[in-house]
Image: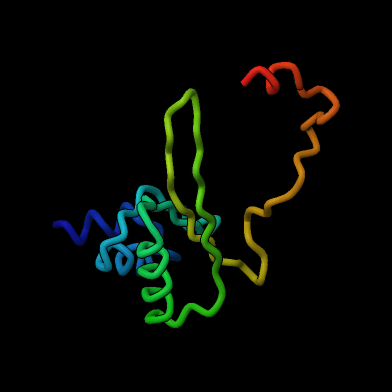
Length: 113
């Protein structure tokens, strides 16, 4: 029964990776087979080693791990995202935000912190 649930809940392209990460003690929190990404809890760099060891064992040659340390309204959320390329392209690139207006930054607000 548990296996049946797992096979229905985790999308095929990344199912084996998610299962092996969990078996290595990495707590995966969400995954998407459409964009080939897996979000995981991040506590320390041992988690990165577990990801590396898992993907080497699965013979995955190309991937990236991004560690996020988001502070929102004073609450901290630290997690990592494993991304796999599709035809050499990752679904998400870190780049400048075109909508960010750096001329509109409230410098006085930042100075008072």
